[in-house]
Image (cartoon, rainbow, N blue to C red; front, side):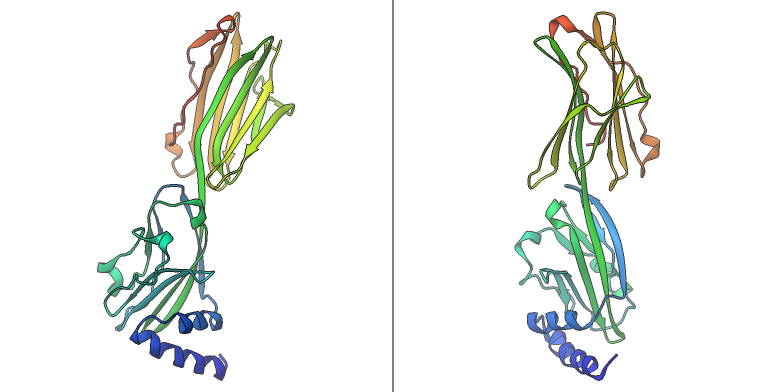
Length: 273
């Protein structure tokens, strides 16, 4: 570490110990690089813990900030100081107060939104020293996957759709083995999860079809199957899997059928809201 950096840190710590100072705090981050980095994956609308640990000491100062210097949460002089907290984090952050003196500076962040994604910086200073960790937060969504049959005039279609983030592909198979590429894919992006819909023309076909959706970030998969039986079309079933909860995999089972002449729609429901 150069003499210039040592001098800068010494000048910065004095005002930090007396209270939160934006100018000095920003300068401190410009001089020090992160000593550790973790990737944390959360789900939309759920809560997450951003981990940060340190060697316990007295005169504890904790500052959580985004890489773009947005103030997330501050603690010093034995209590929270949220006067300069960015409004987007109001009533959504907390530290584990009873664990701070044991070296736990982890931040609880509630009700995740997609704009919460990014790099968070945890700075902790004590009489024993200081640490600064980066936590990379990624947020995913996998909402309401659906497969349905539609009859439009003389044509028949299968439609697979989902609200998902990050955007994912929808793939089709015919008779459980043959990939199908002649589908019409639509994607609508917004401030929330993208809405993705794939439409497959099955007019005149007597084959069975499989629709599969995967969210690689959440390691979550969904699959729906459909088959035609005599004069009826039957939604055979759906299955879903989550890499973190493998025991929740759902078997495929036969659902009720509706006749083509009645032009009814059979839909599925999300097993993992």
